[in-house]
Image 1 (cartoon, rainbow, N blue to C red):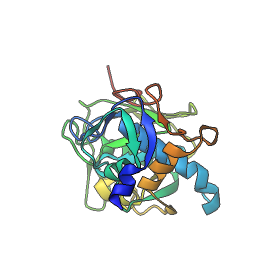
Image 2 (cartoon, rainbow, N blue to C red):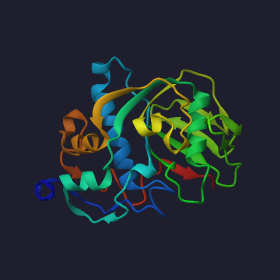
Image 3 (cartoon, rainbow, N blue to C red):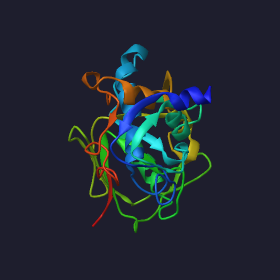
Image 4 (cartoon, rainbow, N blue to C red):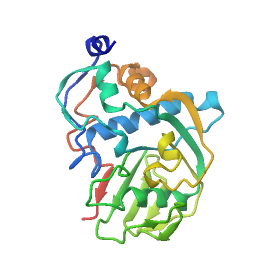
Length: 243
């Protein structure tokens, strides 16, 4: 079975994909992290309607769920690669209508352990974030309630241009629909969703990655090419620190 997966070439990557943990997917944005988060957003966008869910604004993939811990060289990508990267039975899950304040709290959790490598660090899609590693790190209690509010997240802007956080303050407005995996949605890696209702959409995160890579470009997939333009080394600047 494994040899069959290894023999099934699904894509050509023009660029090496960074999946190492530290420095890497547990400390900073990487191009493999961007790819996995994009896959969640793609799959949820395709399937949301079938499950009566809104199309997500933002995608979060915890770094701890990216497991290969290698730099994947440019060249052939096989079906086995997708299992090496995303091996768990983590289901793609949509969390509708997260208040903006909670979205900021979730992102504060993601960067709260920096500079230490931690599985809660998120790879993201659908938005960009600027944070200050010198800011106060968020602290949560066992129920994932905020004990010490974090002051690291300075800016969150959706790809649509909607500003969620500006100069460290939440901008009032509509809630945000988030796609993640059910591990994080249940509070894994201390993600403070705090029991918010979510809907799993019948696909594990590995399948989402597989589908995103092979699906036609006209449908929003990559058509079997992971390009250096879309996934440059170091990522495309979705997560940056204050100058």
